[in-house]
Length: 242
Image: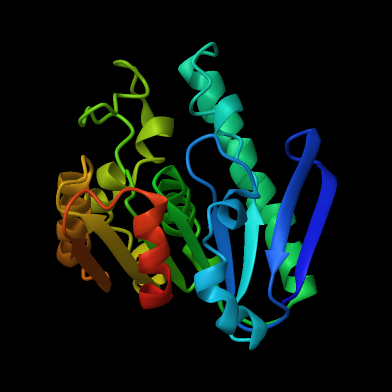
């Protein structure tokens, strides 16, 4: 199986950024790591093995990017405005650097996003905000409201709220989408949400699913028994939903 390590100095972030590519051809899948984790998490936690046949057969290519959560949304030493600004710089890095790099490496026209837990948030948010780049979102155990208190997961912004934060949270802005052009672009995508019935974010996934239905956005909501918020669960999900 083809495995490539790549690294460059990001213009958007003014720092070195690393990523891994698995597979040599086929539809491309942009993979975000879970909260504050690294570009090698997907491989280290056994997520590549269930997909090996597809990767080796040229039916799938994964682009596993690094996280910047510790400098942005989870960097609580910074002000909320600074955290959001750094996150938007990360988004620019993905759109302006990673996507063109991926296209040069593999010209397949299909590009999807994927992640587990907070990686699912990244996958969902970037595709909804910039739908013209993507064809599908595959989100495992995601959180789509950063102001939510759920179980041991707390509001990341402790009362702060403004337009810039609103537009980063799918659970907030999707119900209020009205622009025909924006909705048309989003409706081209296929959304797959996979969540455990006992997951703290189950209600958040239901809310987003209802918003998708109201806006006539094609999607699937798959509910697993139990919490299903661990890599042992995500390893089982991968060969089913990919």
